[in-house]
Amino acid sequence: MAEQAKRRDSSGKWVKGVSGNPAGSRKTKAPQVREDGYVNLVTRLGTGRDLRTHGRHVTDPVSDEYALELWRGDDIAARIIEEIVEDALRPGYELKIGDGKDGDKERQERTIGKMQDLESAEKVGTAGKYERAFGGGAVLLGVPDNEDLGKPIDEESRRGVRFLTEFEPRELTPRYWYSDPKHPKFGKVEIYNLVAHAQGMGRAGSPTAVHQPIHESRLLIFPGIKVSRHQQSLRHGWGDSVLTRVHHVVRDFGQSWESVSAILQNFSQAILKIHDLARVLSMGAEGEKAATRKLEMIDMARSLQRMIPIDSQDEFQWSTMTLSGIPEILDRIAYRTTAAAQMPVTKLLGRAPAGMNATGESDMRQWYDRVDAYREQKIRPALERIAKFVMQEDGGEPDSWAIEFPSLWQPSDKERAETHLTQAQADAIYIDRGASVLDVLRSRFGGDEYTLNTQLDMEALELIERGFDGE
Image (tube, rainbow, N blue to C red; front, side, top):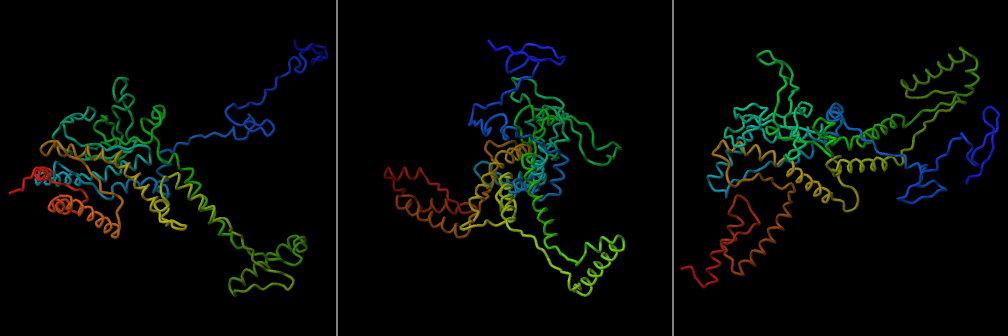
């Protein structure tokens, strides 16, 4: 049982209390001790008084207004937004229909021509940049299926596409959601409310920014970065901007360079030691006036006559600031910025790789792999949906077709020559083992360009194996 002790209360009377904790006194909490790491009660490492335990990350989402300012005025932020989209679309795209025969080629050309007239790549690219900057973007498919825009699109419509219109996320706010948990699109927006940011009045006198319901099936949606449904509800159905994760690093990068610029403004400072200055200033207003007049005369002589006339007991000198270590610090901040942007230094900063044997080839290959992944996830589905409706108007959707992208990595002339030499050696082995020379030549040079794919006539090979001489 705890030992009892007496003490006086505020009125002076003696009262009983528990020893070590008098009645009415406040209990002291023991320091919180972690149980998932190292703990040192002497240095407070891992306890509730460890300075590190009170640090936590707080997300500061980038607003549309702030993202717009960064996109317009910060070159690093603009590259983070634009570069991957532009690299994905820069080589263009191809449409392959069927086996590439004459009829299929003509249809391919017609479809590509119609998609170019619609500015498909440009519209999709703009929506992709909206997604990266503002956390979302969309392209309205102008399919004239005689239905209200608030109703689902007729996927089998053969009326083609008349126009494509891109929208920012704040122009499309959710009106209805898919609320049935058994629906495959549960939790996503079903109908958006369009409030376009176009300026001015229409011909009929009505404003161009009107409330118009649009069904999600009529839109090519670029949803932004989403990590939870709760986050999606906070962002009105959209995700986060890519700048949310990097804007503090971009800010530090820009401010670091501006700080260096400010340092350079004061890099060299003139110092004038005036004999008996303290006594002169102690003389009051007359002394201050005399000192000021002397400084003005010295500064005027330095500006007009490029010399500094001073008393023999005065002294003039320049004091320069040391800049040692600043370039290394700026380089480290630059590396941190490239890591946050997930871009190689050559793409983000326009700098050539530095160091021994540094070519940047591995960094660029990784970047192109990332761009390829972006094309597959974002660009291809959008272009394929547009192509589908365009082809439906031109005889219906074919059984076999695909959107293809050229390789981003272009080998040098030397690398091409080495590849051709290696392939020629392999072709010689094929011919020695019984392959037809015509099959090899047709495989390499039978198409529009040189290819490494080898197509052999397997039926002819089977006849040769049976002893048929081809007569």
